[in-house]
Image (cartoon, rainbow, N blue to C red; front, side):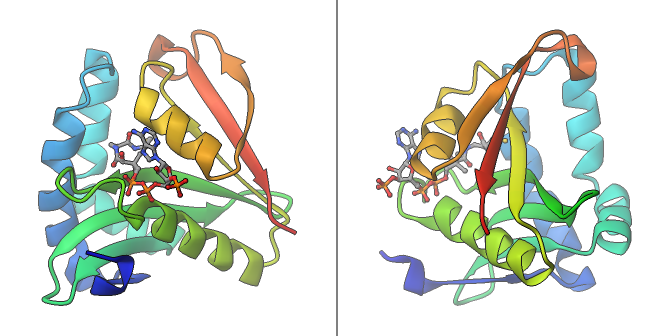
Length: 163
Ligand SMILES: CC(C)(COP(=O)(O)OP(=O)(O)OC[C@H]1O[C@@H](n2cnc3c(N)ncnc32)[C@H](O)[C@@H]1OP(=O)(O)O)[C@@H](O)C(=O)NCCC(=O)NCCS
């Protein structure tokens, strides 16, 4: 199986229920978030909140099979000063390490470049070892660890210069 077997594209409003169904069980399996953070994550993957994200941030990127099934997604939006923020990044757990995460992030980076960004950044939980390996492989630089950050959890911030 190769990434050519999948389509990477911007989501439309019609994709929102499928993204919610896809993402919610994955995030529930990520046991390192505390209760408050988990509650918020689940809310952010609800159809209602994803629709708000769609309306206000406008860059939900999905990976689908050729049959149209959602198997990955991330969100990208432009922060101040031409720096893009990559939020979420979930890949179907049966399709990992086959290039889908890379394809989603590269799509977000192309979007950021097109919209005039010179840098993208993102965060991850320090207990998320897969994310650490992934972002390092993707050429992100670890900016540092913010202690007792959002929801009182430590948080790693990553950056990548793109232009
Ligand atoms: C992190 C995640 C998105 C990676 O997606 P993926 O599709 O498996 O990643 P890719 O196949 O595109 O990998 C890109 C590179 O990272 C490496 N990589 C990815 N996951 C890795 C892991 N767990 N251990 C070591 N290397 C890893 C790949 O080997 C690849 O390197 P290569 O190009 O040299 O072969 C996926 O594991 C996931 O959805 N995890 C759960 C959600 C999550 O933690 N999201 C990120 C933080 S919010």
